[in-house]
Length: 459
Ligand code: HEM
Image 1: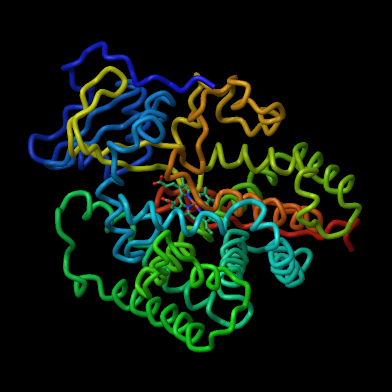
Image 2: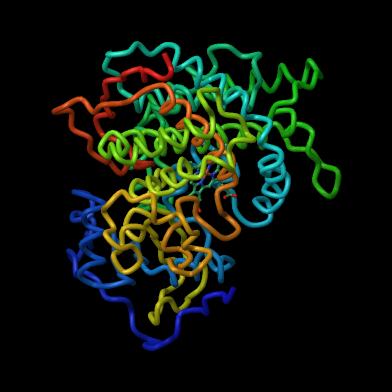
């Protein structure tokens, strides 16, 4: 494989083009009306590298896979996370998602082995049990918000993977507090981008209370586990046991930050992948029928297991295509440490760089009929064959900071989708608006309301 060369320098001193904006506010007013719409218009009008300004803060948008690869993979040492990640750090502290430099490297080295494919397969029964419990509570003919269901089941799963069966009710308590924190995310992220300091906590009492609740819950569980000294074989045990090259274990604060990060990063994203997939399948009955056929052929009505995963090819293709159209993580941000050249333009140190799965993954230069839900495009691995450029599709990010939970997410989503579709057919409730909303993740603004019908074959 030939690595993409750093972008050729065709205009070494030229700044990227971009909309002019207000002399004081820059482009702030335009973007705050509709984030994604504004970025999409910028790409259409100004091309692959676009320069913006929010007040005094320089922003650069990158649309081309070549430039995305340059930032994430070829030259990641020149980029930290963008300033808006500070909003996440208020909740997650120095967990894997928000940490930087040597401390991040150390933590990644400690945590990554727990998420290798061979180590996560043992979680499959836990996933299918949780899916079974959820589906047992569905009544044929009733209308449900399937996104709420997906949030509930993925939260149960991540809580059980982290803490085992010992803590009942913890998922619900954490879920509520996380919702308070993430609901304010765009406001907090904008603040973090525009101000070099955090506003005092008393200005956001609900968030302060939510973070304090999360700390109490997680510190309580960690404290009890340390005191009991009894291993349970869950992720928390792994985090307690790991040692770095100098034999050091994680401090309690670091442990709290990593647990909080895995909770946040590890449930809503997978829930969204499933919610959007259920929506797309309800809109595309021919694709749904083909999926049901695969499930019949591979599973003959029984529950899926980890061993079935390689055989559920079409199920996986559907998930990949759904994550192309509705990427749970719709954008990634970085900040240039030193001046650099991207796409032939000069990008100065301190510029925040935004990259969008939600735009590049629908770019007609890389995907024919980009807005069509077509799982067939994933039949022959088009990324491996080079038919689609690397980083035209990157739902899990890329480079050293690629999602550590990607294999886990795919295992969980494949098993859950298989069980849902094996047992139920979902009809969209007519008239209920399904509208993507770019918040911390790409959420369905009003949820996704469906009527669930038990399939005759699973009765
Ligand atoms: C469909 C589901 C998921 C999607 C789409 C997703 C997407 C992403 C993306 C795009 C990043 C990179 C962010 C960046 O570069 O700034 C990321 C990082 C991360 N994800 Fe995921 N994720 C998913 C599921 C999970 C799960 C299940 C876990 C854990 C249980 C997880 C844990 C993390 C962590 C800890 C990071 C930070 C990694 C680092 O910087 O070293 N994610 N995820």
